[in-house]
Length: 114
Length: 110
Image (cartoon, rainbow over all chains, first blue to last red; front, side, top):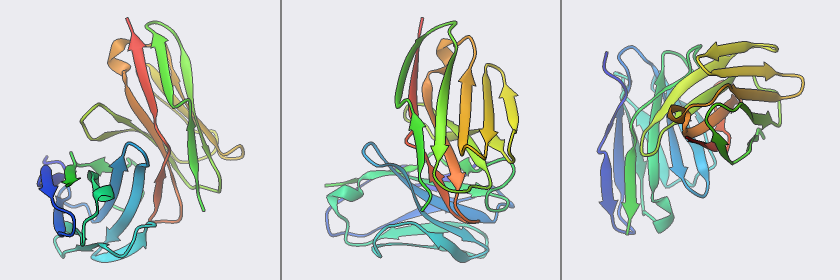
């Protein structure tokens, strides 16, 4: 059974650019959430999607956005990149939000902004 | 707003010893989760605790939940080197929001 797939694994971007990260959940999972992980701030919730609708959003500026498609795949977009956006971005999926077995996380996309 | 705190942040222990990681959360949470993260890797789900008094065990790890005290513990019994990792707890805020603790970096010394 395939796990949660995130692409790309690594990305280097320049300040001011924008970036799109992709997440394919486990087949059948309809809930996809995104997290930013940095050494200073730890794991911070970005947003969660369920059945193509954003159900909740963390405390991030509007430069961070996302969407979910009908096949449950999700994308996250960050516009006007800042140095502080450098982080590991993790996607997690679950059959339903806050499932009984927890979320399954992908390997992450490591974004470096220079 | 829900806040989740873990302690200690760092833990260095000898093989064979026991220790407990604590996870406190500030407001009511329906569920409590524990995850493990190895360096450079993603998070692996360890336990899901659903109700007050819940206790789950897997190998040398045992997790418990006290919703009245807003406290979960992860107890390590007779630690081995393979348990070296960072452990995170996470609590839920509403149906669609998941707040992680700061993480506890565990190093088990031979």
